[in-house]
Amino acid sequence: MTQVEFPLVSDRNQRISRAYRVLDEESGAPFRATVLIDPEGIIKSKLVYPREVGRNTYEIIRMLEGIQYFLDTGLGVPANWVPGKPGIERDPNMIGKI
Image 1: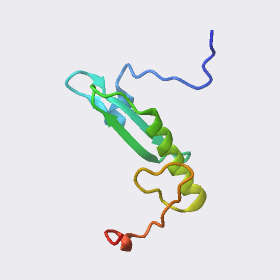
Image 2: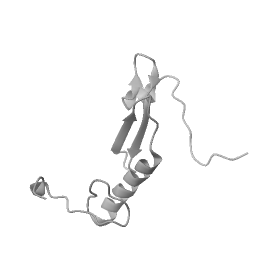
Image 3: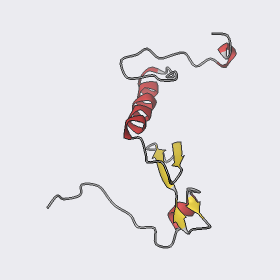
């Protein structure tokens, strides 16, 4: 039997799904959601999926890598960025000019 190496939680009272605003009040069940939280407790990303669509593990990992890339370099990552590609300066004055 495999030992779980990380904590698991239960949300029987729906407190967690309500706090993250992923509870479908009509059905009483949470939507599929992935919430990325940094070590300071700040939500960096929240993806909520329709019931008909499963999560995309590759995109979740890419997002984590993009957040880490920014922390390491100060550069943002453009659409469709993958590790090994260059980042971009985050300059609001350049929006719509490239």
